[in-house]
Length: 544
Image (cartoon, rainbow, N blue to C red; front, top):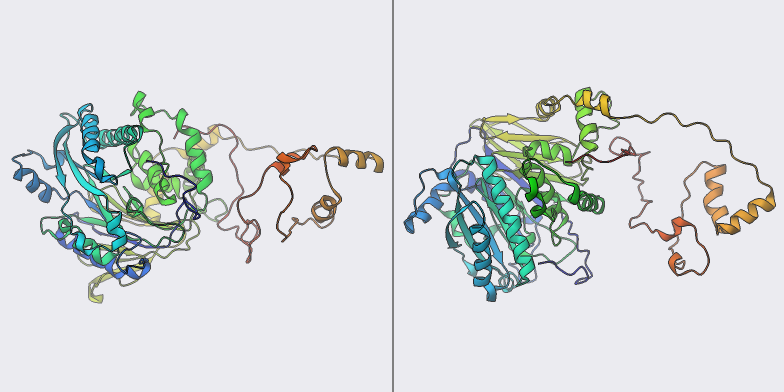
């Protein structure tokens, strides 16, 4: 259900400063200890979150793990449902805010699942301990259920995930069309699951008894403690989202969202065929900046890329002016820049698709992300040092991510991948240099332009015709012409809107900037050339 954009004085596109990280076993061993360590790390980041006036309601805390097969197979067995292969199971988590219409929601969801290729197994009411919640969180507590579905015969893991993604999108569209209340689907996957809510970190394990169950086994966990600074927190906006947890903000959000909306109706894929229209809208209309990034990442992953490749596309390092950058890597970035505009932060990210656990910083590197590696093959990434109590004698390596850097654990191939290795591997998967050479056209050097000469009377006539004032000449043109400076002013703009004028107005007066162009200290491509670029690709964008 879409929220009104005028429902609050707060800026609706939420930005935050949070605690985030992951814990993963390089060897892929599934244990309850990984979950316990992740919850402990989350508790140690509680000070990075906010608490409501009731002293208990937080801005949000959550955890993303692999699907706990042992726990869920036990739940299925209690209903005399048995699976030959645990990997055939997928679980969807539903938050239904309009508790009066729960059965109507369930009926519509069941109908959509029945029309898909998936096999519906059962519904499960998620065990909850409401007594730990604050009054504010309790007053907005949604009804929570999990749906268990089975893989169709002859479908591999990737196709199973695509079927679940498509089914979730169709469910969302059907429920929105029914207009019976607000809802949210935190996760719907055969690989991973999300437990989150409007609480502080200390409450998460007590609120969800599943997390304390010794049968809950996983080899990785992404954790997130939220600090929302711009709007009233909601259960649905707690993190992690379906893939990632994010500390920071996406400052290029308007452009990113507009580009995604513009390309929706030209998207094509052999994997989706005619079903691709059912994936729209790609970006949820009532999400946050972090949720929008998560939605876009999800589309790229579901359409054939792994999460590392998708993240390198979405959040590239500052490659444009980097000295000594590998030619193949630059070609990789140049090629992907023609497909996808960068989602720039500040941003510290931790994410997982159930196989990979990935941490990254955007090109600015203004959010902390530290890591530790134990002698037993446990990798810890967090916003601060000491999020997990790990004896110094067990730490074989530690460090921090710098601007534009990435680190990943592949639990399937039992690999720990560092920044240089990742970028070398992905930049050589395809002949990007050849593609750039064959298909990209560099602009030719423009010819010198000789200005026409006008008499004083002719200039005055033209200035009047195009509505230039004496203030325009003195404050805008003179600094540009005589001093080669960008005109700068600090006064507020109280001029009448051009659209209301009875006199002809220059085209540029019909547009207003939505940001402060002049900052102190200055942040611009002259002083921050190492992380900023004015390069622009001209021409039709390729199909992502």
